Length: 421
Image 1 (tube, rainbow, N blue to C red):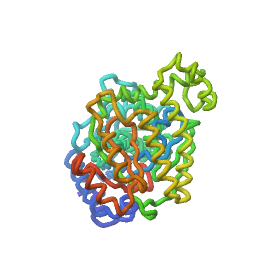
Image 2 (cartoon, rainbow, N blue to C red):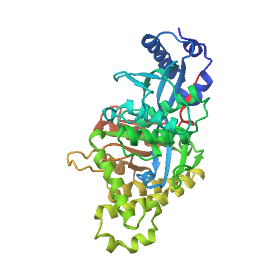
Image 3 (cartoon, one colour):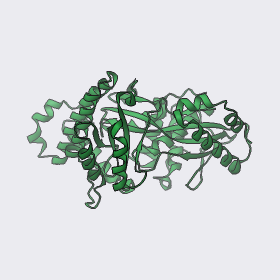
Image 4 (spheres, rainbow, N blue to C red):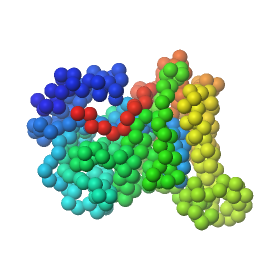
């Protein structure tokens, strides 16, 4: 038995696990013990093996605002990617992720490899390259991982994996000194330059920081971060995700179009992103803008200005525990995403799962809850704020339409990527 397994069995790590997972302590202990057994089966015994975890995240406010250096409101969830990890004395990274083909990456070569686009190897190599560029140390390790963050769920399984890797590098080779912001920037670099995904910074930063967090990306290398203490259940509400199905793999062009079209508007004014554009000047220039950019781009810019202004109001409502204001603003954000941002219905007319889930949520929750598209949109998930007394019925009705297990309530996890023991 690995020494880390003995720590788990003895209860030595119970306090930390309870802090991360709440009432699911016993279940999580068994998951980590099974992961430790899998590590020993894959790599043999190790006295240096340790536990790591990085959470998924939920976008609460600010939809497609981060890549325009705007504001977002996010929260980490108790669903996470877990690992048992041991350092190596060379530059080889070996990761066995349950349900996936094992990967092996040599850190002797850190330049992007076109053959690794859209693969986990690209994330490992890209994070390592970014850390070396900024003077951090990297080195090899063996890991066995498992994830409760469903792929394509909108809870950012890729960011959870990236922050897990960056946390491992931080703890094993940098005495845990790499900050959440540095980890997030390295993860974004890996996604953009190696993986081939034009993502913003919100997913990675939310997963790295933890808890309810309001983020302002106006200065992207030094984003302003405010953690917010709020327990929605004490205010009488549950927050949940409904997975409507659909495949994100074929939607990269849809996400890229949002970034490009918002950028087209910014470039009309000689700017790079919409955060640099004066909203009043934008509206005064609509006639001229229509000659150079599409009407959809203008609508998407209108969404940005509105949602960017909503985020601090949502954050303030959470801080004041003003659930009615928060609920109203969440619905306003959802309406803006549907009608202006237009990331509910993809080009493929046969894919309308999000629209259906939103329509059903409106029917069940009008006057008492809130509902909005979640994450990148076009397919995947919606977010719902549901009165506790209505949660069982809401879940039953959504699962009748979208399948068993599609609707899951989540708790907000207080921290981001961590080494547990």
